[in-house]
Length: 381
Image (cartoon, rainbow, N blue to C red; front, side):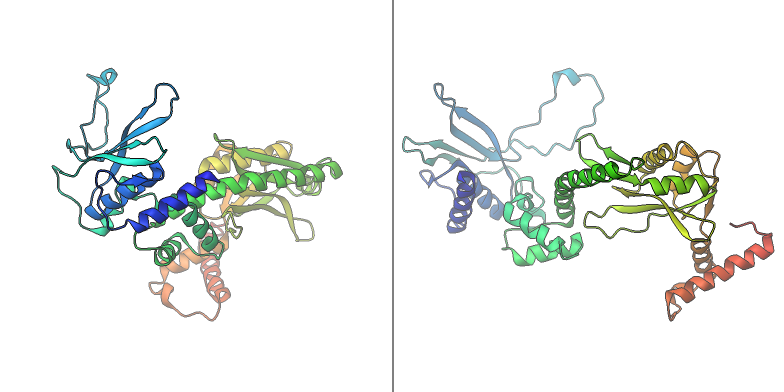
């Protein structure tokens, strides 16, 4: 509660003193209020700040002094252990600037500006867009207010670019959130939410396994112990695969869940020409290593019995994963996908022809495939 009160007071005092410049003797309730005040002044002037050092009381180990400086203060030091070695370093932006603001804690517990200098040895930034890119002014998206706003807007189904524009319009002029920052914030929320949802899914799987002894599931965990991908298959799917394992279809075109995880079903055909499910997965991404993990788990689930043929779309990562896990299986592309691709390549204006429905477009693509089959005696499958 104390941290929340501190944040609120920091915002209030920063707004009241929005147009003031630092002066010796100005009091502040908290050290964070002083930092926000100086950072707001730095934004108007066109430079960035950082905390250079602090001083603790000898007896209590409580911080009683802070020294805020311009981001271009001093010069970058080279580690002695790296002398004589070729090291890739970031661009050195420090120019020995002497600008600073020093605050100290009074006996009453408040903070007061003790020293202040505002003489720069470099040019200040005028463009507001460039100001927002400076280090100390590029963290508005980390505030609790902006985090909550981004999460609520994301629940409406908008993309990062649209979210950033809305946030910038709804917030005051001193805040600017970029689409990249929105993506980063949503990624953090996604990891936190997946951790909670993962436990719910695990409990459901355990309940299902108690009723079905052949129920199989697997979780992929990253280095931060966060769930990335999930695979599961019940006993009915596993037994069906033993009878109809000649050909399977693998597809990852579905991504409609709130976590933007790809839904990847394994589908086959039974003796009645009906679609049969051989397992499902939710994938964190569509990289080759993710598909390799999935195929290995699916093969372990199916008693290490590889399929005779696999039909997929034209995805390079899936193709490479199939070569690594199913080296003896025949990999074929879906005729529908190939047909659409060939139709768009052979028809110069294929993208602009108005079709009554997507089905007509697909049928025209399949006609191209049939024509090539007749010419090449079934070279495409």
